[in-house]
Length: 575
Ligand SMILES: C[S@@+](CC[C@H](N)C(=O)[O-])C[C@H]1O[C@@H](n2cnc3c(N)ncnc32)[C@H](O)[C@@H]1O
Image (tube, rainbow, N blue to C red; front, side, top):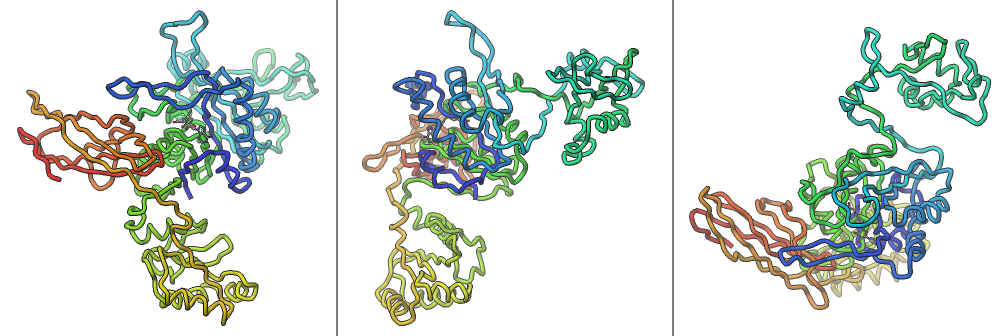
């Protein structure tokens, strides 16, 4: 199931099974030697997250290496990893981590992402415009799709300058330099005569006959194929050259130099205010290049959730991990905002949960949540679950009840459901003294406890009783007060309102941030994702408007408050 997980990625990854992911993208804190800083709110306060490594670069490498070792273990044999870094640590990461863990032979590319342009330069050196993204695979057999970008007019004119009546085409060399020229003649031309070998583009051959067949073809079979498809011409000296016709829909093949994706600038539409947020286009490119629909993508340094949002849009399954509650909450809000009816449900796993929210959630949601938190697999059938809300990994039935002090009849019903579910498994577990089922509730009544004890002593049937609070840690969510500070209507009739949201965290906790939805309907859809101060101004037209604010604490627990405004010259509040 798609998951947002709060915690240290090393600990979380250690608990995962081998070889489950097809693609891993990671954008760890860089070894920048300073804190990542952003200026928040009107007070221009400096906020930061840790990106400072006391003790130097090798401490950073020692910190990152075991995490990449886990990622290697988690990747399928056909999988790939993209590690995003910059000049501070890129050489160290490549030599001391990636080459060591993945092997230098599995290095595929160092992608250079030109993320900014030189404007002015404060220091006495060349401005830094790029990041590095290392692309490694686990083995030689991996998923890979070439990337094409749009032709620029200049490029078209310069490259597709030949014409043969059927259209414009480029003419390029079909040979490549080599240390060991082989005698491989084709139609009277042997590249070895010039110390070269054949250099036949695999892409084009694959496009014509498919990957499997292409792998088995000899050089002369490939050349024959291109020739038959009118893709080879000869110079007057008899040298064959590749003819590539302009294909505007496909564009031009992209290499390891990416200069066409701009960073998430202050005014970018997708910007949500998380320091180091990466552009969606960058992730779109990586995910489409190295995975298929339905594949599993992991981002263990999730940040604002760019990877999982793009993976979701591209119909990939995903898991995102971050140690900051802010990152998990913001990612959840981004996913909710882009959600359409086809979005698969996802789980958010925090360290603590609010008791009232859990207790009062929809019965079906609660059952699923409890099963997952217990480590089981939920039954997705809303109706007709026949008393089995989920199963453990060994197939043992789990039933969840939202009540307190459940009575004896629940034992009888669940016992019957367990037998109905799989009689053989029931008998086997009974004979070997294993639990036949797990019954989860907030608390259990005397009659039920006695019946469970009787089943065990008389029939050797073990049904384990599990209290919800024994495996779901509860905490109190923050409180939230929402008020209007002032308003003013301008000449055009728009009314600007200043809002204040004031959250109070429970003991020993702190407020992380606020988020706002200025046209709230049924579900929260953030207009402002990260507001550290709880102060907002927004302009409204005449009419009725519903506004929602959320406050999130450092456990990721949140509270939502709404107000309804009637704006018509003045502003009236409807609570
Ligand atoms: C550079 S940011 C990622 C930005 C992200 N690519 C995006 O587009 O928003 C790095 C993230 O890694 C998280 N992080 C750092 N150390 C971590 C750890 N040990 N476990 C989990 N997350 C961690 C930080 O909290 C931060 O959100």
